[in-house]
Length: 266
Image (tube, rainbow, N blue to C red; front, top):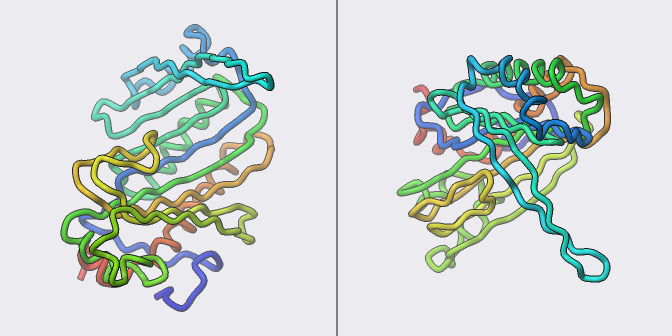
C-alpha cells in the first residue's frame, strides 16, 4: 500500500499498531501573540489548577535569549517557561509567553493524544485566552537503532535510505536530509528530516535526546502558519488531519519489513 501513491494527497490508510514502535516523541504545539503576564505566578496559577490532576508536577525554567543589535551590541533577555509534568513523567505540557506545547514519550493512540490536547487547549482558552493563534504544528519522531540500523536500507524505501543504500554505507558517520513539502489539501506544510546520526549527537537538543549509539531518525513536522481566532474544536480537528497526514507519509517511507520488525499483527 502507498508505494506508488503520493502520500501528501488523499486519505490516510488504516492504522497498523506496532507492538514495538520506534516512536520516541510526539508533540503538538500552538503559538500565539505574546502575552507577557504568562510569566507571572499569580497569572498562571488558575491555569495550573485546571490541569493539575493530569499534570501534578510544575517546574519553572528560565531561558536566555541573545540578540545582536545593528551596531553589534548584545541584548540578553530571560524568559520563563512553565513545565507541567504527569506523575509518570511520560507527558509534559510547556507554556511560555507565546506558545503551548503538549508532548509525550509514551504515545498510545491518536485519539488519546488529541483528547489530551483538546483538554489543555480548553484550559488555555479559559484561563489565558489568547485571541489569536499564529501557528499549529504536530510532530512525530521515530528512531531506529541496533541491528535495525544496520538494515535500514531494507526497512525504508530507496528514495529515503539514500547514501545508506550505497557502497559508502560503511564509511557514513552522519547523513541527514531536510525536505519541506506543500500540502494543498490542508493549506499547510510538511517538513521531514531523516538520516543517520552518530552516537552522543542530536539534530535537535530540545526534542531529541542524544544516545550512546548511532541511530537513524525520521522527524516529521506538519504545520500551518496563519493568524486566526482561537477555536478549540477547529484546532483539534486540524491537528487530527495533521496526525493522519504524518501517518500517511510514515507508511510511504517504510517498507513492509519495517512493519514486521516492529511488531505489526500477523
